[in-house]
Amino acid sequence: MSFLWSLIVGGIIGWIAGAIMGRDIPGGIIGNIIAGFIGAWIGTALLGTWGPVIGGFAIIPAIIGAVVLVFIASFILRSMGRGRH
Image 1: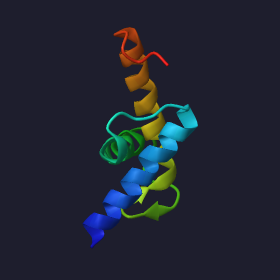
Image 2 (image 1 turned 180 degrees about the vertical axis):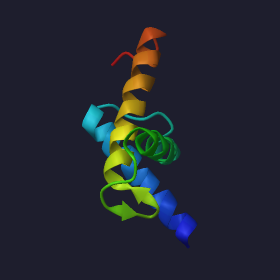
Image 3 (image 1 turned 90 degrees about the vertical axis):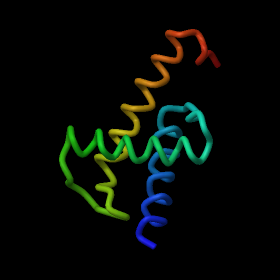
Image 4 (image 1 turned 120 degrees about the vertical axis):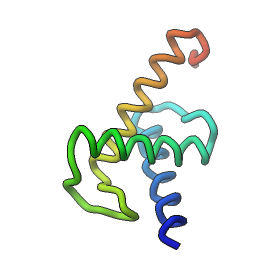
């Protein structure tokens, strides 16, 4: 059950990051979950584990890390000419 909870929280973190950046994350729900997990890893590596922890994720660093991930991914896609909106 904790794995399911982690998937839900990871998806919400990815969705929040996409909403903050104003960009859709490719891959829909799966993309949001992946962005949430990778963003949590980036955020924890850069900022530590402060703030509230839900589903095994330190929420604030995870959201910041996911925003950084979405920014970098959108920059790379835009550089390649595929991310134009």
